[in-house]
Image (cartoon, rainbow over all chains, first blue to last red):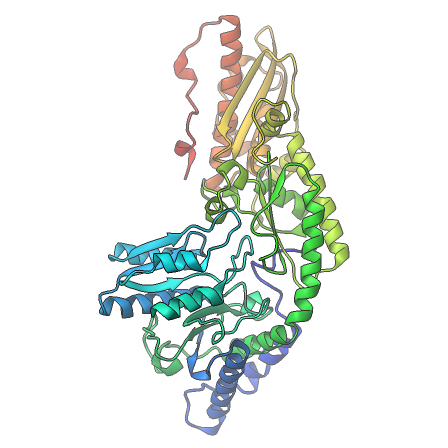
Length: 395
Length: 143
């Protein structure tokens, strides 16, 4: 199998697994215990916190371990909202193409009387610092903008947006789930107040992540019941997962430049190869995108059948078509960048990592070309386009 | 468990009766590209019997498989029998579809009815309009 769905999850690395194992059956005490055996676990936990903080450019006290990106997003946004509401501020700024962990949390806040402004992300999938500056009001409690989009991979000008927020005194959260370990992320230099990340996007294990909340930023509990994580997140710490995440993060940060160069070159070749297919379009800015992200729409076909036939050819990928989501609406990300429904249904996301090879990229290009061509040959939509009965949307 | 039954995958991977009949006696197209599914059925009819049938489909795996199965089920059958084909029968013949994909089998049923209606209209044959529900919107198929 050629695995090209690394934005969905990554293979847990050997480094991460090796880092986890001792914490299942050697140092397996509860870090809350007072005896020496438990304190060994506590030391490992705090060592991991310091190492994660070093990778992210923040203070260890600013790192809270969570169950992953969704929990971190929820806690950051709900905390900032509650802190804002206490000062009479009930306005939140975000973008139209955030992950649902953000959008659904904002929907919930809307039902509780908050006003949410979702910024337009334009056809290139980018927001500008000026848009954020223009949207900030006296009662703005939070700005939350994702670092990099999970579907189309576009990388936002986070540092500049953070600067705008800092100048206006508005807390700034970024969902950095797709960015951390793939592009340089530094909490301090990026002017970020809250940051979410998830370990399994950079070869760490599932079910563990981080919420960074800078000094002075309030955190309110989602989970009550214990004094773990300075009382901000109850539940016995998942130490094996935390140790695996920490090792994976260090490895990703250490190899970041080399991986980005290798993966970026494969991405560019993949984009070049797929662009030769007629009537297709790359989704998201070609330059300001994650090293491993490729996302195309092919006119006249539907994404789910594309994925199933690619699977038959040994390629694992994903799509923003409605049929892959269980609803009638295609990806909100593709709609947000202005793709019409019928075009968004024919989308394909291929996300690479450093374990992919240039040979695999060539195989993918050939497989996609064959499958798109076959599906078009049985598509009444394609027939109408080719015969001129309906005009092409994608030139 | 796999997403689809083996039968669905077989009809998806090797669809029967795929293509176009240039001199078709009846053509039916249902669905909406906006919803992600369009089915087009071409019928060749002689003495009230479907002598040939072809389809083209834009859609997901279950839409393609439903079209393929439905065309197999009506080929060589009298129109009166083809009109009794239900989405339930198509679904059962495919060994089931996931709940959120049942609308694909509804489209297959309606595409066939639309093609028969087109044949009746072209030839001035009278029929009961109630036999031909209007597939104008995808909303009713949506789960």
